[in-house]
Amino acid sequence: MTRDYALYGLRLRSALPLPGAPPWAGPPDRPADATIVVGPVPARLEAAVHSGPLLQVDAAGRVRHEVRGIAAFLVEGGRQITVAPAAGTAEGEVRLFLLATPLGVLFHQRGLLPLHASTVAIGGQAVALAGPSAAGKSTLAAALLAAGGQLLADDLTVVDPAAPGGPLVLPGMPQQKLWRDSLEALGIAADEQVRPGTAMEKFVRRVPDAFAAAPCRLAAVCHLGGGPADGAPRLTALTGARAVHGLREQVYRLHAARAMALDDRLLLHCARLAGQVPQFRLERGGGLPALAGLARAVIGALAGTAAGALR
Amino acid sequence: MTGIFWLASYPKSGNTWMRMALASLRAGGAAVDINRPTGDEDAISASRRHFDRLLDITSSDMTPEEVASLRPDLYRSFAASLAQPAFVKVHEASRRLPDGRLLFPPEATLGVACMLRDPRDVALSLSHHYACGIERAIGIMADPEFSLTASTRSASPHLAQWIGSWSANVASWLDDGPCPPILVRYEEMAGGLAGFLAQIARQAGLPLEGDGAAERAAAATRFEVLRGQEEAHGFRERPAGMARFFRAGTAGQWRTALTPAQAARIERDHGAVMARLGYL
Image 1 (tube, rainbow over the protein chains, first blue to last red):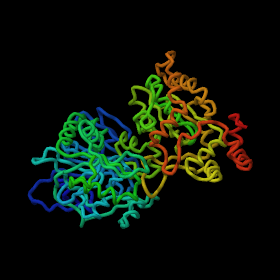
Image 2: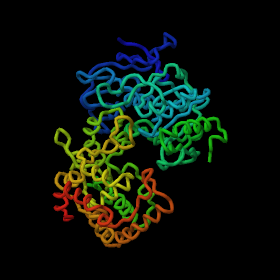
Image 3: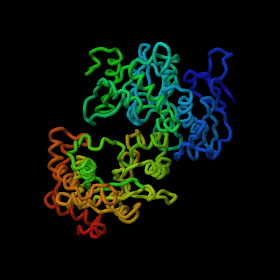
Image 4: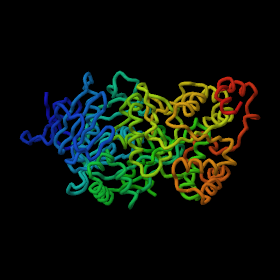
């Protein structure tokens, strides 16, 4: 049954159920901005300008993505995602991969700036925690929620870089994905497994009561990573070319975006963003036991106080 | 036509030392900073960041089997994108997927250098690295299921790495790898590093022969130099709890550090491969 949802500032019409996504509650006469349909997807794109093992791009900028044994996706014009589930695949697994690469590609096609980041609103200001997989973005975001923050997005953060008044973070799904070790360190429970029936102890955690449902001004970006494994958590300002480069490294699905000939535009977005929004490098130090200190460092940076230990 | 040059070894067999030497070679024999040798964190076979980026996917949402199934395609795709050789460290055994494909595909491979070390010295070095007793290290080396970064409870910056036992790991690269390897014995690195570098450079098609770069690189990365840097500045790759990564760099310490019973146990566990390599 097709439903309309509010996701990343779009009225998203989806034939695939998206439990957990806020239902559309905006103006009833606003047309759908993008649609998700279930239907056949070509086995390959003709005249592909880029062909990787999982993703192809054609001259028109259409993107075909496939996760073998789960589903194939076709993303067109920033307006439509066609989903062809593999036989016998659980809906949850199709959805898991749909809301990642295909959705990120959709926003690239729409000219926005998707980042590989988890973003939390604290006191009406958004701080994006950016970094590669396993850097600890979701876990740190959860710690910030525990400190009173509200989730804007987990893993895929969409920024409107040209919004009047400054870059705006658009609200995503009110849920996170967290591993068993993180859940235990945080002392929180989760909902279902991300991959039911497997040994993977990674879980969906829904947070509708700790969710920022309205777009929020981006006030800081913290780049997680680096530093010795047994060091203390460290927050340092990132400026100039390193800030621009750091931001560009965290563009969501950068490889696909480059294949879509978006490199120049993304560089421009990142350069402008780095000029408007303070960037920081955040070294994790000793991992999970240092979580509370990390959260404090981020809150301090946001407040711009000396307690943020800016160097 | 270029590709991936695999630097393959069971842990604690000289892989890091070789990587430093190669970094120096590619910089014309210049000094290297052990904390920033190549500037390329993706140069390990199991880099999650590299996998996710090149395949445009989130590997931590995939099962280990799904991830493994995509790795040959990843390496082929990576190799096809290269303008010059990529040296990639690998501790994993060369193994085949259920459908028979090699994890590290021949089509993506420029060459293999296999770092070998007497397993009795490996056991000693392993016990320091993991701050565990020698008995435990011997057990790890005999464990056919030994793997790294394969937790089901968290995601590591590395994909799950199946190392296997020392014997199975070494044999896999000698007998069932993407191509016949250049053998680099740890015991010969202190004196013969320049020769090994020249061999690897030839195999990889690096245009560095004849101008002394291999000799300069060997000198710049003498074990004492690396250890000195660690003493002065630390070493980012040293695990928490380990006193020193670049410890001794010599061969045969096992003769005084292992008990006869411990040495006998290793020789029993790994006798066939040890004999084949001349360690017995």
